[in-house]
Length: 290
Image (cartoon, rainbow, N blue to C red; front, side, top):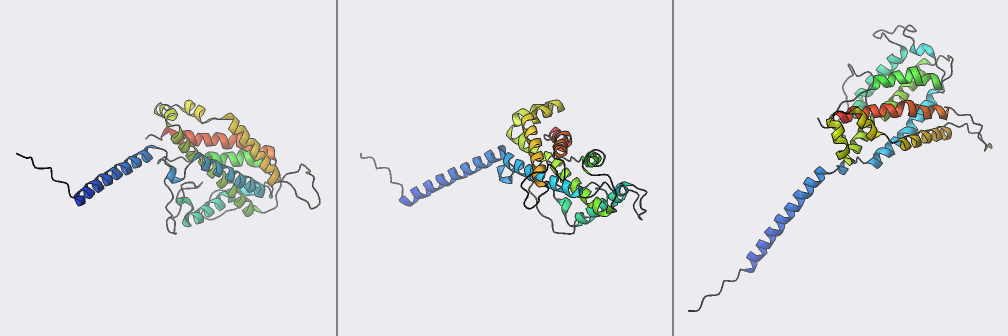
């Protein structure tokens, strides 16, 4: 008896089977890539160590120029004296009044919808009146705000170092320049949250044990790079020399006179900006795994 031959699979069925196999394989690859991308550092949100460093360097320029603008005016101490003027609804100094009112206006324009911006007087700020902008969500939901420390540092320690004594009556302009300095410093120092996030992503295995142990000292050691800090101090001093020199036509020499002393700018970073940034980084990281 002759066995019948195995019937040949129709060509159309062969094609359909191969297509289904290829499509399923394609889906598996896509799913695997998606899971891998979630496990790795999320580069699609634009947060990289290089982008963070670039932003920090640009913010140096903003801080130095804001200091130069404030140094145009003398101390103008009545600006900070609560007894100087009686303003209805305000019980503080003229500086506090100007800063509160300016922040209120900026809040209605959406400034504080940006997670990188934090007000100095957050209570009772009016809501934003402009369409909401969807900012990239790159940070873990950890709230850190050390603006009170920045306020104290600026008015009680930094300001007397770089402005001259005197009174020219330009109190409102003085307070406006103070706010520009405060906002630039606050943004730079609270940028520590993004610095901490990108470092955590790149070296998670090193940071996790210290975070779980709530070990501040260990986190400080992980975050500290002495050579980098010294380079930053030298760079901002050089920028202060470049941005703040007196330029005269036909004079190629440097008289050594600057609008803001470069040594003070270097000290600002060494004594306050860098340490306060680390304070923000540590507070953020302590709750990064919550």
